[in-house]
Length: 444
Image 1 (cartoon, rainbow, N blue to C red):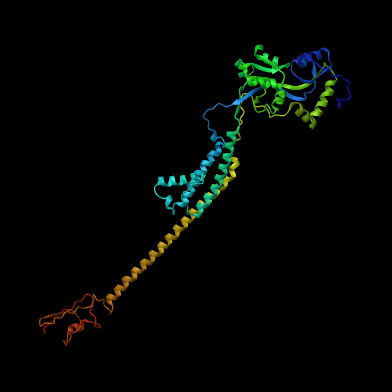
Image 2 (cartoon, one colour):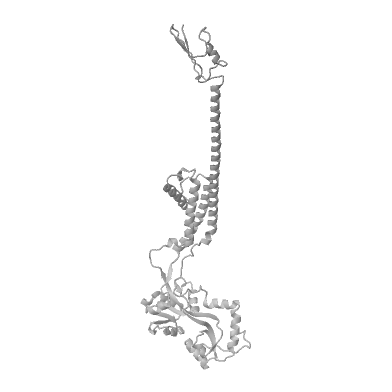
């Protein structure tokens, strides 16, 4: 009131009755205005003037949250998103392929039949999950690939373990009622705040008066929901959002109850005055100035508390931890993929270079061997035609020591026998032509 100009003179009076009766007394002139948590509705604005709302409002449901039923669950896959699971499996196979390609030429453990090679590579790479890989790797390139991959696996395993532990240890709760239509057709009892317009709202939505139960305090709200509709309580409390927010802000109840989405929208809380009252404009201006500053937020927190926004109607809140996404580990996959690809390319280049060196060396040895064969053939020809015949080509000399005839297969003289003139004429320089055999018969 200090911000109003001119400053009005006023007197506060306590009213004991319903909000509808209070608004009716203002419209009849019994009171000049009503200051409080009066909800602006379409029925009330026809008989009274309201200021700008000083807080947002609406109607919602408060329900009990219960433990989820024991069923077969795939909780172990929830810590990772589908994309992250897919990327992990792909890089497992790719790392195994790279290690197999690098180790295949020189490591006997990765050789053999196709089935043996495949099983060895897959077993090795999947055993890195527990760091129990027993197969030996010999190439420095594959060792680099495995070290980087083990680092990535370590981070993935630790993050997965932490997320799974959070999911398993968190209290898993879900609302008993998830939809206002479900509540209307269930036949269960419904609670509301005493003297609130919510009573007429519920009756207008085909909920009979016999199913309605009114409450006043937070303790009554909690007790009625804990009992349930079959034990003298209710299945849900229907009330305005500021009151439900204040209820959930209490540490005693915040973990056991859930507020569903807004089922009916209202402009909010405002002050009611007689039709045409000049105070409406002045108070609306003051409310707007107050809401634009920090003081308005402090007042709202003091009287209505703070709580997370209500969930949408018809949905079930997810109390699980947020799953790990591919974006969180994209850098790790880029690193291990790049290193593995680089090592694979280096291994292929080294293999190609070694093959080229081997082929070049084989060509040099082939040329050298061919030259050696040609030299040997020419040398043999020279020995058969020149003045130094080989032992096989030299004339053989056979002589008998007895007094019988002898055969001389030689170009040499036997004893003092003079050489045959024919022999002398047929020899050049003491040698016998190739392919010529001389046989001499002599008597002794």
